[in-house]
Length: 300
Image (spheres, rainbow, N blue to C red):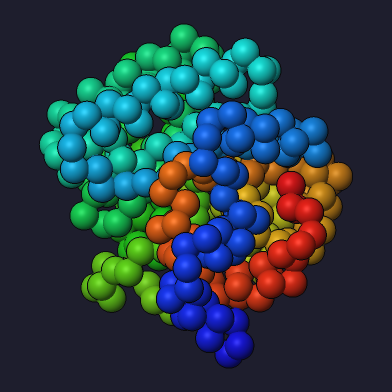
């Protein structure tokens, strides 16, 4: 209740004050700052993926600037020998302008990923963008093998979509989903979302595809580990993923010490303010975490 009150109050406070709440889970505003955090993450035994904050770009020139920034990231990741790939949002690259604009920009990024022998993830946004995101993914996959996509466990369509796409060589992140969607197309009950998440886990195993388990839900992590052990899966068939800065009470280190790969999703950029407010709205407990740790060192 207190955390909810703090989270609802924060948007009314000055922007400079909100920065205190964003700093633990946003890796700065510049490429150099973000890469510095990634190096620190790598040194602690974690892999990383970088996302430039922002979405729903409505002018072509801005989409080109974002595209150039992602290309620069691939170059610098390679130069610094970092264990890091990139995650991109189609609307950040112009999907709201036109499908062709987004495809052109994503193709430029794919070519740079290929040039640097790196991986690219297409993030999934709200349900209005799902079909076009899969179309972009299919196009990219035909150009370059090291491309992946995301499935949201709260969407009822995800089981069918995964059954259609998953196969050896397929790479997908499974997450719960954060956008507000109608009950006709999405589960709202936490138990149903968990059950659907685990069904997606099973499909990826059956299809011999590479699964990225993106969750902070300790119950789900426990269940996934049970499945992994029961199926005797090799550690090179999956990884766990978490958001940068979200406290996990030592669970991440425990997973790494058990031999599992853990990848940290690292957001950065000038759009930190909108992202911070959204994170607080989605998870008011973050306000309590930040107040507790505001003067301590970052978890990563």
